[in-house]
Image (cartoon, rainbow, N blue to C red; front, side, top):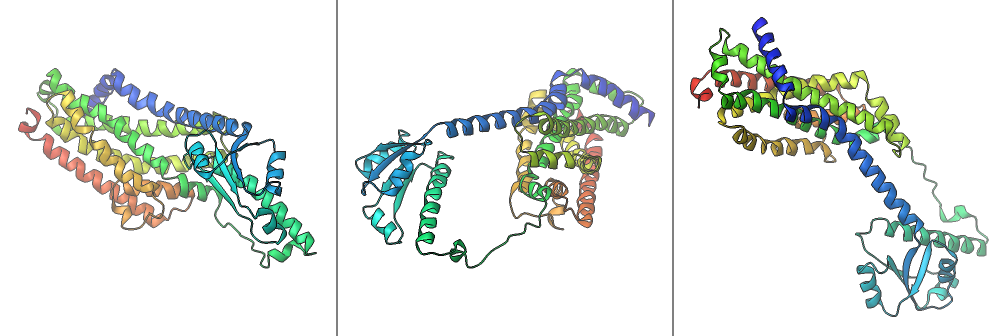
Length: 394
């Protein structure tokens, strides 16, 4: 045990001297969440404010002069009307962004309104402009509600006449459950990536780097068993991966607590989510996962002859980590006995359930047990691989 501690201490010092490792382990996890949410929030707020302040540039082909819709639109300050001759020109102007939206009012618009029939309006818009359709829909809905009230009054009816059934919806899901189910899969996606990236550079440096520096052979000649050397180095690799993931959680907390513009419901849910229980559950799952990652990385870094070769081998593995992690983002994919046995997929889905507060203890235990099994198998493979002279001195 003493030898393992000495080796781990030595490797920790060497790792902390490496600038790339420090950046991937500390700087990136802490800063990535605040930067992402700051940029997204400010960009979204800026775009929405500009869109709302600017009048909706609307082209109109009016086949029924003097109708109530035109009068209604002319009185609104958030709409700017421009007359257009034909629908072909109107479509071209909307497509080229010269107009934000186009309206074609049918010839019998006023007559149909007076006859209490449906009056037709064709709306031209580009789906690439996300806010335009919502804005014109809200404006037309206001006009439609006004016409509906006039009809109700003309018939001397109550407003309840058009709603024969009063439907009352009761949402049984808490805000935390909704946020967890919709966005909870995004969190493990990032945590898993940070675990992998945080462990990758130390793994390369502690094995391939030592082969390049010709110090691995010297270390093997010391009166220390290869198992102790392997465990000492693996402790450093696993620790850097775990620290990277934990700092990512800390960065998430900073992002939601100190960045202005976040919806209150999200900040309250996240504040309640980032508890000691949540952090401990994440740690229990991330620890065996990171050991599993280390067990995959170490044989590959031992096999590689140079730092660049090891980097070129491990970097594509990032995609193999990302693909199963994405399953947590897919609606309808739930944590079951089957998915709880699939590495990375299980931690992604389990974290989503933990965030939502709907995790079932048997499935959580199956997830943790499967991760421990995979971690154990990867360590055993590393021990066998590291024990062969031909693999080390390749």
